[in-house]
Length: 468
Image 1 (cartoon, rainbow, N blue to C red):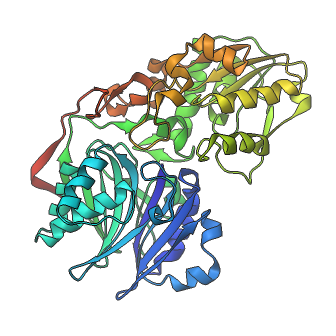
Image 2 (cartoon, rainbow, N blue to C red):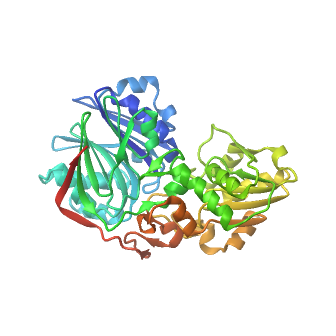
Image 3 (cartoon, rainbow, N blue to C red):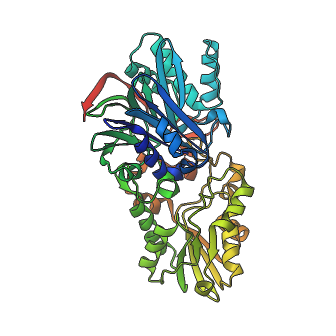
């Protein structure tokens, strides 16, 4: 639950990174950081807050250099601590390593224990530092950067898209299942790599391609060099990127997020025919699905809720109390649209249920006669161990309750979810190419105590290379 970006350009990197991270702000609102390299020095700045709050004009003026890496963070592994704000920077044996990571390792503690035994002293509680330790240790032992990344892929279990600067050169790599997104773009004078295509759009970069699962890339202003280091029988792209997490205007692994969400609404209307006066989204994450529902059902689209554009995403607020306060700050009903009306309210998902209940109470408070809650994802029944913040079954309302029991808890007139087959159809990728762990309880890699749908990850003996 983070956003990362890296740039190698003939012009200064910091401005590109600022706007790329600004476009990725939805992926993390707690903290932000930018590191740049000017040929001699790594210039660093990071802190708590939104991108626009952390990076003043004075700060930006000090971030000199043509190569850089940036990060916006929402904490999963490691918690909310100042030392966990990324990127991280390390000096060792005359080398310089600046690294940022999106994802979540499931064997962090085992790896930390192993490398502490080798004498490594960790200064953070983040799994990102574990990734850095593996890479640095291999380089200290005389291996090349590609060999170090390949070894890291074999050691680390979980989801990871990583961007780092090593001795002034920019690298990036993606886990063998491609769980978290990562793409490459070309600016007028260089190359950029980022979590989502919207970051490329913001800096007027041409989309080149997604980083492939198990691929490592070396990025220079003029060229991108690539090696496939690990392979799997099939990828396992995170389904929640399409449901909620990615921006609607992104293209993730060749699929338009907006079109997926609109299609889920269309299919949901067909699966669950509903009689009502209006269809309304829970903005903004339910908007595309609501337009699809309206189109397929013929029910008039009307906004029942108006969003305050100056608030963040309630789902990624760190505590339930803050999430509930944020709902009232974020959304306000349009009385004339809902008084004495039967309303179809469309949202992307139900996670804990408390936010949904609060939203429904707002609509009911302003006079809705009926609220038919329609959800553009199947019930979320299992934790995510791979980077999305619903880590325990206790937090997930659908883990222990039926749809009817959830309906009663959130006080909806009716409640219906899209089917799993419907969601997969909307995404348009084969079922085997998606991580559906949060919806099925079966995960694409080994997680202690959980069911596994193995994708048979293996190293590539002779590196497969390509130059872009």
